Image (cartoon, rainbow, N blue to C red; front, side, top):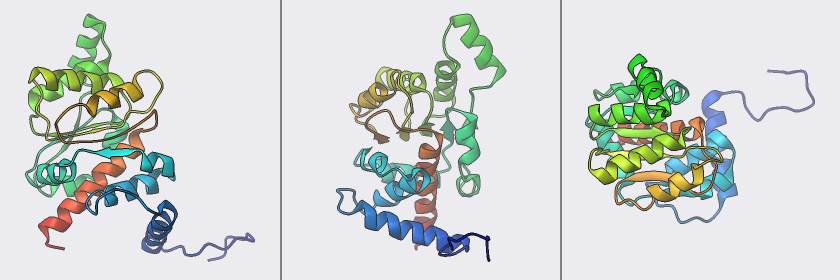
Length: 219
């Protein structure tokens, strides 16, 4: 295929593009301390962001990968903090084992309660999710207040997530909320610093669901 430019792409085949990207990521990342189980998540996050600094900043609880795969294969729900995260997750692989992706940020009762209490919708949505989804995978890429509220509920014993993927992006409380998450002895995937966002946590969930499928199919 000729794009009418001096530059010629290496390939226009989707699978070849992904394979070449992963090869380039592995070559450019070089030496690292991630385990063989963690590396597919790191690789997909770098693939989604083209940000090696972000990739190197990832931090995994020792049981994070196992916990995420187990939760998916057991049909636990995936709870997203915003619609953008929900939209990016590959739902077919989650639904294959009985799970679903939920997001409560725009629920009418959440909006009403947030206004009445003077709180962010992210906080109220987190409270609603925790009451309804013990053992779920909580995915937070945008709202540090959601992550801080989840941490508070975990400390209280109200929330019992199977895994927390907490990488909110931003300036106000983003880095600090991740620092607090890393103090907990629960399965988590996070990173240090201000970087993060919807595409980052989506990449992590999609990597875990691929690993779950491979484990279930014995590949």
